[in-house]
Length: 120
Image 1 (tube, rainbow, N blue to C red):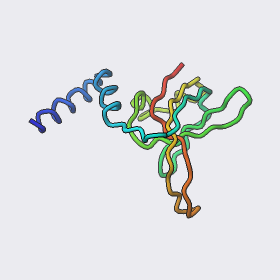
Image 2 (cartoon, helix red, strand yellow):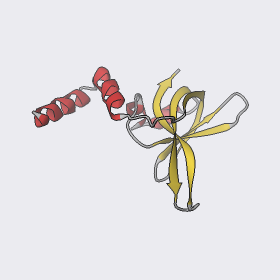
Image 3 (cartoon, rainbow, N blue to C red):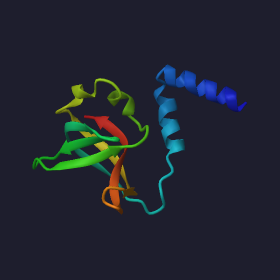
Image 4 (cartoon, rainbow, N blue to C red):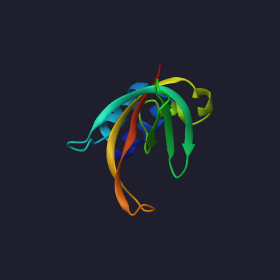
């Protein structure tokens, strides 16, 4: 039965079933108790590719805000190929603050992980 569920899930992903993807993201996401969440709107300035992708938004005052893309989220399929077409587009990013260890800094830091993106 488990393999049947996996096969059905794969087929729904191939068919780009939006309802299934939303449900999968909700089921996979386990928000930490007390974790900060929020929304940010702005123009997409660039996507930095390092070990992970970072969405860099600019607000009305031209201040840059960075959001890390760690795992699949609602809307991520739009950015897996030809993401440059969204440069200068207005986005609404839903984020969750997580604490991670940064080896180069030898310390823990809070970063904002993307959990959803909407192109406005």
